Structures are given as structure tokens and as C-alpha cells.
Length: 305
Ligand SMILES: Nc1ncnc2c1ncn2[C@@H]1O[C@H](COP(=O)(O)OP(=O)(O)OP(=O)(O)O)[C@@H](O)[C@H]1O
Ligand code: SF4
Ligand SMILES: [Mg+2]
Image (spheres, rainbow, N blue to C red):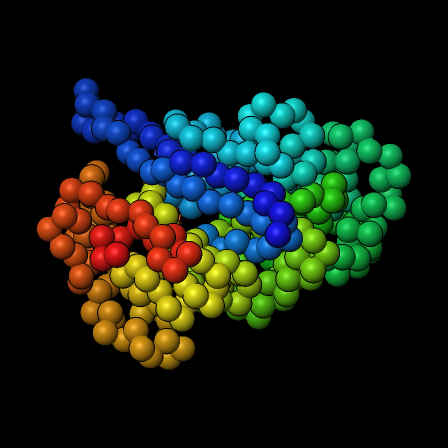
């Protein structure tokens, strides 16, 4: 399988204010390495504040990494020009916020074509509307006159109009009703069949289960484990993945022993394993470091291995 995107030792440090004079360093990402293969859906899962959106923003060039690099088709994404935005597009969580309320659906979907000076725009917009199963009669409407599901379909039409190779979708179904979520996930699967790869960011491991080919679990900016969906969900190696699965009702009864560990607020420690304040299997060394190892060809960060 051809690697499309290569994330190498990505670290993002923010300076955050602590009191009036003091600033602290916050590691949103710590040495994350990941690949995205052509035409796959890579699910990125973790709780709030794990670093998922930071990863997405760097891939979209909305943020610069502090250390590390991202290669797309073997070239550093920050050294390629405007062409990158043709090949990599985005879908955000809330289409109400991401779509310009003053523009018609037609102008919203057409805008990337205008920016990239693509001709034959009417035909391409119509094709995109068909792919996202939206009736052409909606083209003159404004986003406020659409349902939540229709608005997200408009955002998807806009994201696919330049025929991208990769879409970063950051919690794209989180603001939708359950029945609409299912339709939108099916739409992503049909786009994947056409060869588009996705980085699909979600806090919900059930969504990953429905859609992803591979799963990357992230917590406290650390890639806790990555593997095929089947491997990660049915044989999780990292206690944090087991914790996430323990919140899934019924489907993973094996993981019930982790039910006691609630999503209470824990300060993520600066050093060592970010999960150690909550980990039932922590060891002394977890307070000071965390090892990244390969177990049967799977990458896992955990001192149990
Ligand atoms: N611009 C910023 N300045 C300072 N800290 C930031 C900034 N952006 C993100 N962070 C911090 O970096 C960490 C990771 O944030 P990020 O938004 O990537 O998390 P997330 O996994 O997407 O969370 P959520 O599920 O809530 O969207 C958090 O602690 C967040 O507060
Ligand atoms: S490194 Fe230690 S604290 Fe972290 S998940 Fe593994 S066992 Fe638990
Ligand atoms: Mg986020």
C-alpha cells in the first residue's frame, strides 16, 4: 500500500499563561509518528485535550510543529505551495460555524474551484452535490435554511470538489443526531471507496469502530498505540485503549474490569506516561518515562512491554 502522508516525530509545545507573570509549557503532541496510506480511513481517537485537533491542524498547515515534520507524497508539507490545499481538505465538527452564513450553497461549494481557477465549475459542483446526495434545488439556499445533516453534506461537497487525496475530518459527526450520523458515516465510506483517504478524528471509539481501517489512540499528546481496527479494538495493548473500550456498552464485555475508571478530570503530568494517574497497571517507572516499542509489528507506548 502506498504511503500518502508520513508524520515524523511530531511535537507541538504551546506556552500557556500561569498566573500573571508565569508561563508554562504544554505539550499538545509529543513525538508522534504515523503514516496514512492511500485510500484508508485512519481513525484518531482520544478524550478531550488529547491532541487530536492539534495533529489535524498541523496536517492542514493551520499550525506549525515545534519539532518533527509531515511529508505528503515524500515532500515536507510546509515547502509545497498552494497545490497542497487541492490535495488535502478539511471537514470540521460544526457546519453551522464552518460555513459562511451569507453565502449560498452554490457559492460555498464552488469557492475552492474559484480560488484554484478551475473551469467547468457548474458541472463539477453538480457532480459533488450528487455524490453527497443533495438535491440541486438546494443550491440557492443559505446554510441556515438547511438541516444539520444537509449542512454537513454541503461541507463535504465543498471538501471533495477539488478531488482531494486526503480529507482531515475533525469530529464531523459529533454535532449530528444519531440517525444522521449513520448516513454521514456511510457517505465517508462511499468516498473512501473512490480512493479518498481520511484522517478521522473523534473522541468516540464507537464511531471509529464503524468507519476506520486503522486506529491511532492518542492521550496527553502521546500516540498510545496504533494498529488495524480489529487489532486495536479486539486486542488492545495499552491500558488507556482498554479504558476507552470499557466505556463502550455491551460490545466489549471482556473489558468490564476497567469500568471503575471514570473520565474524572486528571491533570496530565509533564513527564512519564500521561495515563499514570489513572492507570490500574502503572509501575514506578511510568512516573518518569514511557517506552515506545513494537509488539508483533504494532507500535505501542507503554512500559508493560
Ligand atoms: N492555541 C493553543 N494555545 C494553548 N494551548 C492549546 C492551544 N490549542 C490547543 N491547546 C492545548 O493543547 C492540548 C490539545 O488540544 P487539542 O485541541 O489538540 O485536543 P483535542 O484532542 O482535539 O480535544 P477535543 O476533543 O476537546 O477537541 C489541550 O490541552 C489544549 O488546551
Ligand atoms: S506506561 Fe505505565 S502508566 Fe502508562 S499505560 Fe503503560 S502501564 Fe499504564
Ligand atoms: Mg479537538
